[in-house]
Length: 244
Image (cartoon, rainbow, N blue to C red; front, side, top):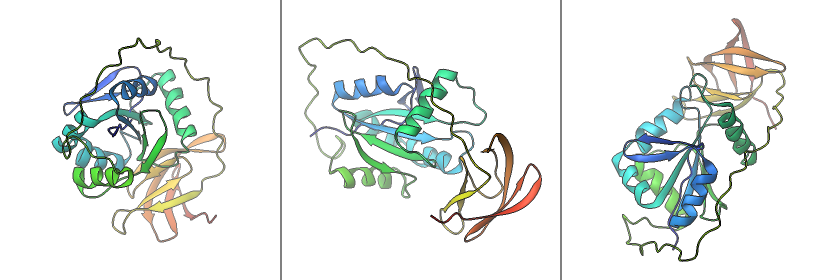
């Protein structure tokens, strides 16, 4: 049975973390996954501002148990949308294209691809540390890592493979946002998170939010059952949850 490949980071370089490689090139990661008969996991994250993303990294991705699992079974790729970390224009465009392709509306979102690039799983933050996270993946796909069940060694293909030629994605059309709107409320009662236009935040956090033709500095003051109290460029207001 093919082993699971998680594609968590996109780009052209490799990020080192806790003994496991995080690629930053989605196309190269998929090629590697196909060669090694693994699955790919795309981790759509806001590494320097998203509280739940940082919690998932701290509790799962940096844990030795997950590192061991990933080394044996996965190709990791991070698709990052930071507020402050420097990133090339090409990387931003590539990440934005992936977010559009997979319909990403909140962070963290994990997309799992099989060795042929077909999406087979989608999840977010999972309680229970590495065991809970890995169990969630394996329960959905009915696959087992080499930690649980020995797998046959990967035999290199004898025939030469056609060289992979990377074609940069064309520039994406900028997303146009309307007025500030509360899109969703998630999390437990004591750990709630809201999605306002394109930004996710918890109580006490501040983010730059795109609204109409400008960027607004939004501070989350209080999250209620169906609304949130914020300040927008210093002006207090309450946003009601959008009903679809």
